[in-house]
Length: 487
Ligand code: BGP
Image (cartoon, rainbow, N blue to C red; front, side):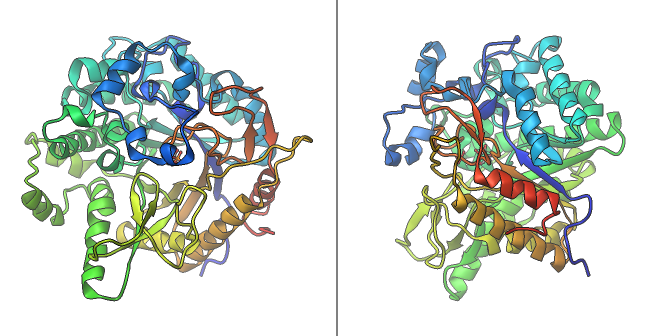
C-alpha cells in the first residue's frame, strides 16, 4: 500500500496564455477570439457573474472587432507575463515548483491560423520561455489550445464548425512537436474538452445567437475537436516517441441530492452527459453507447467521415487530467436551489460552504473524483487545475494574509494523499492561477487564485509588481516536504 506522495510527484502551477500573457498585438501575434471578450470594471459583483455578460453574441462580437479601447478587453493585457516571465520564473524557482503548466497561443505561432509558415518570433518566445523553465529545474506542461483560436479562422471558415479547422489545428500542433518537442514534458491538446458544451464561445468559438441550431453546432464542433485531438496524438507519438499526451475535462463531481432512485439515476446521466462522454471518447477511443440515446432524443445529428472512427480508436490519451473546483448535486426535483460553479450553474448541496463566487468547496469530492476517474480508465492522472478564487488585500507592508486559500489548498492536498493511499495513480497537481491572472469566467483581476499577488486592478492599472502571499510560503513548504508538512 502506498502511504505518501510518490518521490517524483509533480507539484506545480498553471496559467493560460490569454489570461496572463498580454502583448496581444506584439511579436507578430494575430488577433484571437479571447481578445474580443468585453468587460466593464463598473459592473457589480452580480453583473460580473451573469452568464449573459460572460457570453459573446453577434452585437458584442461586431463591436469588439473594431474597438481600440483596450481597457475593456482584459485578455489583451493579462499580467504582461510576455515581458515578465523571467522575473516570474525566478519566483517559481524560489517556491520549488516542479512543473509549470501554461498554454501556447495559436495566434502567436500562426497569426491567422491558415498561414503557410509559422511566425518565427512567436516560436522563439516559447523556446526562450521553456528553456528558462528548464534552466530553473521546472518541467513544462503545455496546453496546445486553451480557448483562444486565431480570429481569422472564425471569420473566414466558421471556426470549429468547419472540418478544415482540423487540418489547421493539426498543422499548428505538428509545428509545436517539431520545434518545441524537446522542451515540453507533458502535452494537453485541449483545455477542458467539455467546455464547448457549457460555454460555446470559449470552448468551440461559436457565437450562439448566430446559430440556427446551436446545440447541434456544438456537437459538430466537438466531433471535429475529437478528430483533431486524435490526429494530434498520432503526430505527437510519431514525432516524439514516448511523449505523454493527455485529455482533460472540467470535472463537475455530482452526488444524488437524495437517496430517491430518480435522483441516483439523474446523477448517472449528469455524469455521462457532462463529464464521461468527453473522457470516454479520448481514453476509450469511441463514442459511448449512452450517447446514442441522447442524440436520438435531442435530435442531434453529427456528420462524420468514414475514417473518423478509426482515427479516434487508434489514438487515445496517455493520461487523464481535469480541473476540479467544486461539486454539486443531481436531482429530478424542480426548483432546487442553485449556486454558481465553474462553467455551469450548480445545484446546491446544503452540506457545503461556498467561495465568495458561490462555488461549493468540497475537498472530499476531489478524492471521490480521483477514485472515479482512476477506476474508469486506469490511466495516470494529472490534476491540471484546482484553487480558490478570492478577494485579497495587499497590506501597506506588501504582505497578503490569505489563510482562507491556505485552508482550501491544505484540505485538497490532504484528500489527494488519501486518494493516493486508495491506490490512485496521481502524478501531478498544477494549482490554478498560482500567480494572479485575469479570471476566465468573470474577466476581472479581483478574483484572484494566486500564491503570488500581481498589483493590477480590474482596469488593468497598477504597478504590475509581484508580491508573495502567505500561501506562497505554505505551498513552498508543502512542495519541499513532498506534501508531508501541511501546517
Ligand atoms: C477553468 C479554466 C481556466 C480558469 C478556471 C477558473 O474553467 O480552464 O481558464 O480561469 O476555470 O475560472 P475563473 O477564472 O472563471 O474563476
